[in-house]
Length: 125
Image 1 (cartoon, rainbow, N blue to C red):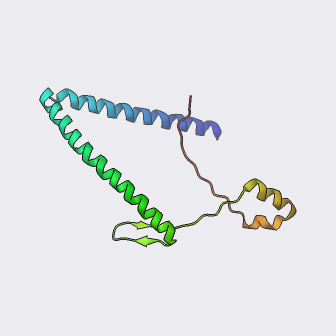
Image 2 (tube, rainbow, N blue to C red; image 1 turned 30 degrees about the vertical axis):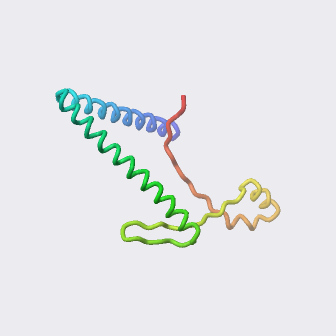
Image 3 (tube, rainbow, N blue to C red; image 1 turned 30 degrees about the horizontal axis):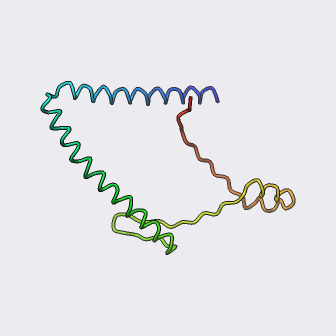
C-alpha cells in the first residue's frame, strides 16, 4: 500500500507541475498574439485593478479581524445576510501527560477521541 501511495503522490506532483506548465504556456500564447500597444493597455488595466483589489483586500482583512475579535469577546455566533461568524471553542490537553495519567486511571481513556487530518505538502529538498 505504501508503494502505491508513493506512486500516487508522485503522479499528483507530476499533474500539478503539468498544470503549472500549461498555465505558463497559455499566458505565453496570449502574449504572442498581442501587439505592444495591447500589452501596454493590459499593463495599465492590471495596475489600475491591482491597486483597487489591494485596497479592498486590506479593508476586508481588517474588517474580518475586527469581526473575529468582537465575536470572540461576545462568545456567540453572529449571522449576517450572506456570511456568519461562527464561534466555537476547543480545549486541548497535553496528550503525553494524559496518557501517563491513564496508566494510573485507565477509565479516563473512554473520553479520548482521535481525529485524522490529512494534508498534502511539498517535500522540502
